[in-house]
Image (cartoon, rainbow, N blue to C red):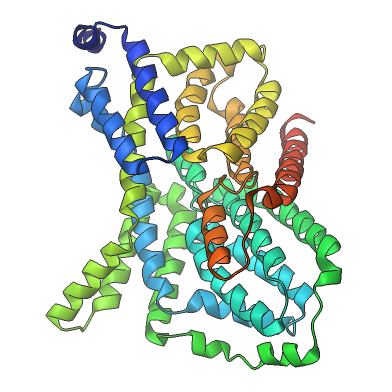
Length: 446
């Protein structure tokens, strides 16, 4: 094979060994967080090309541009919509609907966080909800700690429910050409069940400490939620575009348009509505500002990661690992499903679940032909999604949202310590994955 010959001539090594060394070194640096993750991924991708494992053409072929487009489009839409204050409005409105009762507030904020996380990325969700949580708990004069850690758990669990809720789902959905509704049908029920168990479990353990006075409740009830809406016109435009985009996602499989195209189109429409009628200089400033809302570090990280993993795939390493996995599970779909959900959860609690899932996707794909095809393997794919997303709750570094909330809590004088967090996170992760295991068993194998 030409690629193999070139790789051998550059390094004088087997291309499989070279690709493995590149991936292992990159992942070690990523997990150690000593360098920017986008820089590491791009350097790893460059090495795949310079060593001859990939050519520039094959490297570009390895990038999933549908995933990139979906991420960029949704980042622009959410970034612009956020300026209207709509998300803060929902949180304050929900708190007032339960009459500022601390126990009711725990339930409301948890489900609001889970719901938003199903449609926004988890980091954006907690950046929107946590400040409102501090504001309300400060007026109620109660400890924000149980609210914050429950919001962490809710963001990771809620994001599991849809195609766009969590990066692992975006990767899986794009790789398998799954629709928005595929995720909703398969995962939303288990996410709902898990959230109910989680919220009432928290209420059981914390309800005695969630007490306040009527005077403090009135302080919250006096908040005018309408004041959180900073731009009513933008609110209307944002809701209109979000509705169109979600409708597009739902109907994507029928209209045969990729989710990435729908997201980019939605972003373009919202940019048009957002800047329509402005002066030239103001319009250009708004567009530049909107593009600045995109997390380009994440975009370039994904791009480099796709190339690195494609290098592994091209050298046949992932296919070989897939065969080893088949031997380990005796070719049983049920054994594979249960093993994947737990391996994914445990590893995702300790390391970033994005590179883990990106590596697992081509490996599992390579197993499909030997295990009955795509349809037969779907329980394994859903196990990967559930395990990777739920596993993010296992430790304080298991997901980006966890780290963000911990940082905000530290600045507010309510630090979330790593070891203290484990007291809650490990049981939550184990219970949620156990629920997922039971769900997968009865859904596919009972």
